[in-house]
Length: 407
Image 1: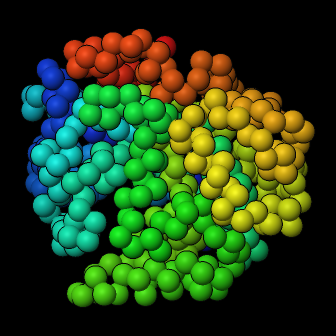
Image 2 (image 1 turned 180 degrees about the vertical axis):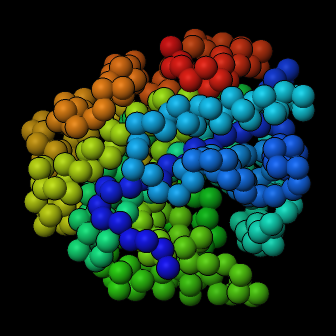
């Protein structure tokens, strides 16, 4: 039986990265070779002290995660960075390295995707059969996940209400995928633009990305899990898919481990930036959960359609999105229409006293210089040649190796 924790007692953080060849930045589907090198034998999970490594779906993506729940959010940037440098050292003789950001800038998923061929491969094969995973929404997406615990229905209600409200703002802080197939897509968060529709064959799985108004375990099963189980039945003839695994909303409830996982955060250029974003989101959630902003009844009232409208704009425009829904802004004590960037600056001022000072410079850089998507686009400065894109993304790989911001 898993141990149950109270709100914000512990955290689980996951960070995903691509493997690429340093010479040309083409994807390197060799996570199995990396793991074999580290472990001496092939495995899909490696426990490396306080951080674990695993593989997900495709052969070129590695996920680093806290090895179980942790109380210490502020030491994680250093821990993740140590694992990144270790992986890069192991990859060097294999002519590969890690690359950050939420989407590869010129991968062709149709010709380059290789599914993971080892454990869970039958699940991945089934997914591929239903959805065709050789597209950007499946094989070219790297994100950061935050797992937050709840003890019982009462805590779930408060946490789920707060998370639903914060989801639309996340691309305005974390978007990092402005380029696909060598072109600026016009979306700051192209990963989420694809994420919205990558399961259109069975719309029950992702819904409207913003979860429904379900505030008890019973409600959640009736509103979200039962429709998912029913919808997948004709496809899952061998009964191998799990409703937790199938739920693809932007935040998913895991009643098997009493946690909610937030999945809308694009991976950044370095763990320092990822953890600063996580720290800010968590402290803002605490303000909501502890009713320092809007009362619970007001938080619960929001329907997914209204929240999705804001999220949808944020996917396209990132931090420059102008929010005109005054009822929504009132939740955060803001009275006039403003950009998402302004909303985050306001929330940061409120949350700052509770954020560890090691995150201040990083958060302030993000809020003043813009999302990584914005900074990548500015660095390209209208030269979208493959050569120039490679130069910019090689710099991102250096940022990851050195745990520094891309400026």
